[in-house]
Image (tube, rainbow, N blue to C red; front, side):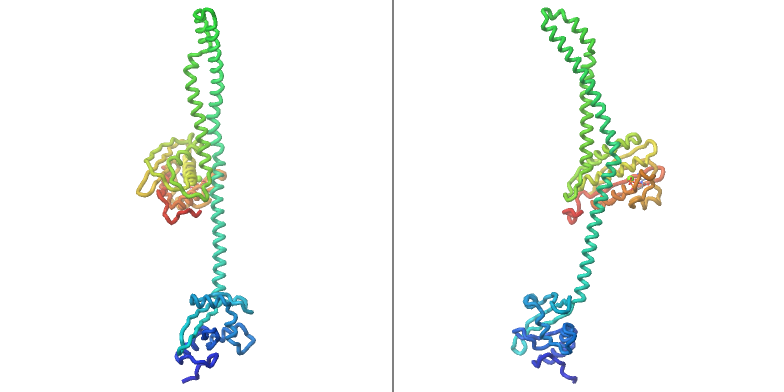
Length: 415
Ligand SMILES: Nc1ncnc2c1ncn2[C@@H]1O[C@H](COP(=O)(O)OP(=O)(O)OP(=O)(O)O)[C@@H](O)[C@H]1O
Ligand SMILES: [Mg+2]
């Protein structure tokens, strides 16, 4: 039998235990109930040596004095403590496991220490890198959000001329109607004056012919017929302007930090069509086949942006005159909206690429290639999908499919 393994003090453990402890790579210390060191194994001495490299026989008991009091308390209470131990050796992190027992009737505290400085440094490094990645991700997400927003604003900028035209047109005729109405009002007031004069005369009946003449001269019969029409047309004009302004307001609304709301996709599609109407009306007839669909939980202004990109693309795909067909319906727990055109179509090999950012076949200044990439991102954020069917020369159909309710886990929103 080989020599009895060395221990720090003379007090004995059972022999089996001593061997097990001596052979362990873990630093093991046996303390009495006052916290005094009774035994330590070789690994314990190696650990002590790390703290005092100049001392050939470092005292492991000194190692124990470095452990903060709170560390001991936690280790005894929870069985485990991990912490940095303030020594001359920077960054020494120990894991301490403690448990109490009895050795031949006496209270003993067994303590196992592991130097986890390297692991802890690695974990710290990993955490730092993770935090760095997280912050880069957050910055990217916010940049993407800004890109989305600026693309929306750029689209509005592009549309501004068309929208201005759409607003100018009704304002133009309301303005001209107001001029005519002013003339009508003067004529009618002149007639009222004529009647008043006639009433005041001694023989009103004698004025009848005069009044008849005045009526004819002022063209009152025509005015009476035309006036309600002018008023109605002007009211429609003002309503159209109000509607476009309202649609624009909705479209440019930023829903950041708000929850998704159950929204009326039909209303969204209609108001978006209203905004892009000036770009489409000279090129395409628009047919609508809408089924009744339930409200869909979404950011409507973002979904409107998807509709806008699809509508503009459909318009641009039509060379001369064509047909754009809008449809929507419900299938199971999803609602779909499709925008179809009978324009140029998309060749098979290009279909793979149309959702790539900056992929465009349009001349410089006409397309940036972001429309579908952004639409894709928005729809993916809503846990939906975009399906495309296209044949060169026949046209394309883009179908946006959205779940009626967002999955529970994705609420509340994290943008
Ligand atoms: N309805 C469509 N018909 C034919 N080709 C289409 C249609 N929609 C998209 N495409 C093709 O997909 C490409 C990418 O479309 P996307 O909307 O992403 O960019 P863009 O329209 O070129 O530019 P932007 O939308 O940024 O102004 C288009 O350039 C076009 O080649
Ligand atoms: Mg586009």
